Image (cartoon, rainbow, N blue to C red; front, top):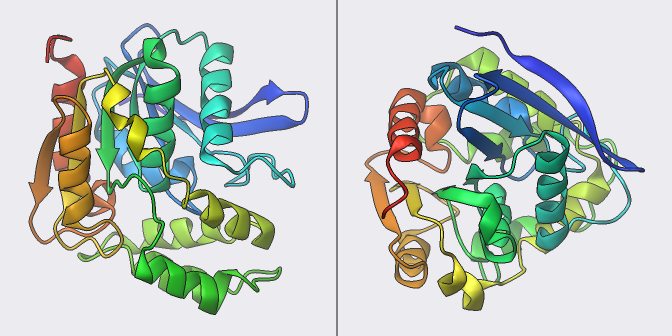
Length: 270
């Protein structure tokens, strides 16, 4: 098993992104994009199980983890541009893009705006927008709109607990909470607003073979959105995991690693 290589990369004069890389530097590239308030570390259990034949890169998007935390640039399109910039710096022409939750929106945006850079698309706990989502609106009103630094550790822990249905390793979960606490209040606010962006009218433009992975106990991305994505993205296929919540790659990383590796390696004909 190869070790992680965690580092920083500069994608703009005022923007550096934290990332981790694992696997064969010359293998098929897989780029992992995390959820709201997470970082590249949220993919560590998955990365450890993916085959070494793949070149796997997990990014911490701007404002998250140890990446730069500028005052602006938290719309979905800006995140997508950052990812393309990171791929350029890393010398990656095309990659399978895997997005979880917020990262699914960014992955969709990349597939829409930069189709030639995406070989496969994997969406986990996905949606096309969180506009009119009652749970998100309640969280905005009760917690996020008036959030100030430092972020309440109890809030971060309760928020992350709400995303899982089955237990995950305590040490890993503690690290996830610690990463959430690195996110400043202005990023919590600005990023949540970006999740209200709606590019659903452009989903039919996605050309990459697409796999959607969803846990049927997901409290944020319900079945409506999975069926919506399947209808709108040409040829998309849905895999449903019984008894799993919003973060299948935390709750059942072995199965997700096997599914992801098989999907990435199949021929491009879909």
